[in-house]
Image (cartoon, rainbow, N blue to C red; front, side):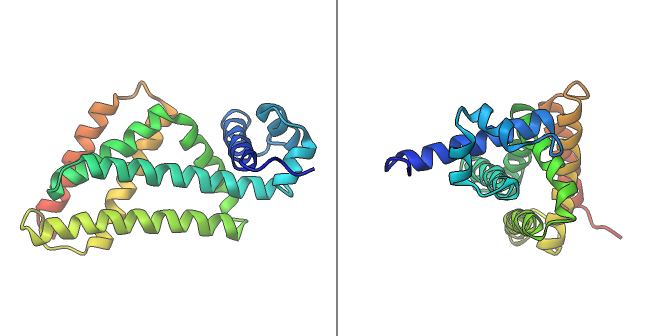
Amino acid sequence: MSPKRGVAPLRRTAIVRATIRCLARDGYTGLTMKKVAREAGVSQGILHYYFADKRAILVAALETVTADLDRRVAAAQARGGKDAKTRLRALVAACLRLAVEERAFWIVFVEFWGEMMHDRRLREINAALYERMRRLIGAVVVQGVRAGTFRHTDGRRAAAVVLGLVDGVSLQLAFDATAFSVAEATRFCTEAVMRYLTREVS
């Protein structure tokens, strides 16, 4: 029997969220449909109604995690003001906070990175996320270049550098939240980014 109208999207979302919690707790190799069903509070029959197999539910989980990041970054940009420096600082801060406030996010990403090398669909989802992030950061860099705030540089390449820095520090925060605070990480990451974008590189 199919779910009642209006229930299906909510139940599907609950199952995907349960999958993310299971991935964060048990890892990719420890994930089973049985565990997800138990975590979501549904029968395995209901689980299979929404998702044919483990791979299908993993794809949905990765899509959900990347959509969450998109929303957070968009919200940070909306709050961050109009000038390039303020927008970039807000973006960096939002990404770093995620590593502590939503630690499961980064654990899930790390779990997926290993599988991406063997699954084209997972690679495509991740590649699309990074392309969106490079485009977003690159647009802010170009804004700063045009305003005379940043040195003349290629926005896309600069975005890759900024993203690499933020990813690396976010991972360190996710693995060891005692290494430094989010505020401290935001400060030194922002300083490094601003030095990179304002000083000529030989």
